[in-house]
Length: 88
Image (tube, rainbow, N blue to C red; front, top):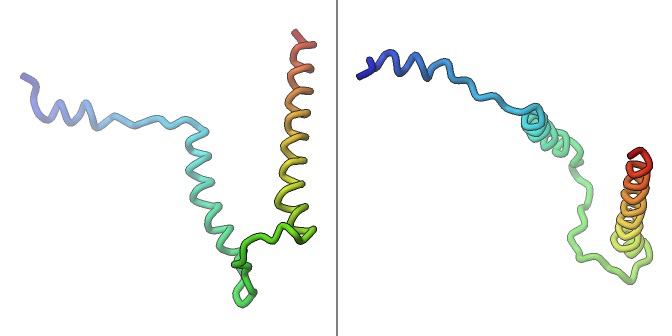
């Protein structure tokens, strides 16, 4: 039977190793919310109404631009795949 002190010594050297991506994620989670809170200005009106899609600017910002970004992303991904296939 092992001595209790040897069990504690064996486990006291244990240090979990985290991947660099986890460290970056933890760092960003610690920094980003504080940076976002700093952007909220006092005394400015904040919109609380639902989006009015009959307004042209709302339609462009909330519907057309996201669809356009998604389509451009698909073309970009396809170009990357073609470039990788040519290299092989």
